[in-house]
Length: 250
Image (tube, rainbow, N blue to C red; front, top):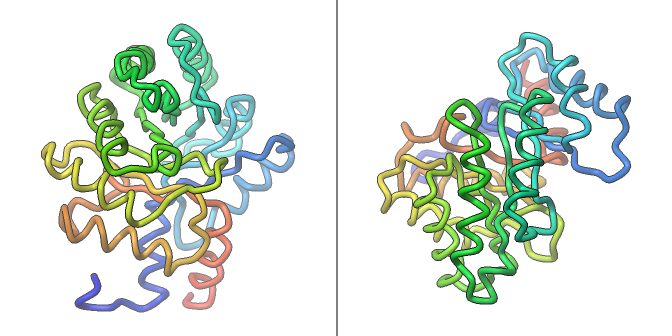
């Protein structure tokens, strides 16, 4: 992408179907979530998914109707606990409520303490609860892992467990998505054959920032790899700029 710069409106059109429009506020109400769903219906298209807390899954499902947009939710969020049975229960309840996609926080503190086996046990429990029909994104909390070695270790846990996406961050810690962490994650995905997707989330507020992650993925996996099935940007503030650019270009 960097060799052939694209216009802002083209970038916005490219990003819209790759966006997980997210609202994970502790004070979110059903009314606010319904308003978010209404905003998501742009004349130029829809985001890939709406990501909300589990208690709002049914609201999103009803508001979206028969659109192509998926309903995503979070489990083990944002604390990244180590109770595999609880993670599995949360996952089953979310799916029963209508979730198409699960974003699970890796037990990153267990990994930092040297217990990779416990972290893997929790991922396996969530993967089993998702079954074959529900997409699983593993939030590794890259800013808390901090070092390239720990980030790679977390990626390999997810890749070995067969998750569908590796995701940078919850957006609830001091350091969230960074290009440096994303590069490591994408390298691991590429080394594993590119079968797993990548999601950048946490602090991505502008089209320019989102473009950095597109360029990283393009450089490692190619433009054809970048699709809603393999690449997502998780954001809330970004959507306003994106929508404004698309409206101005219409």
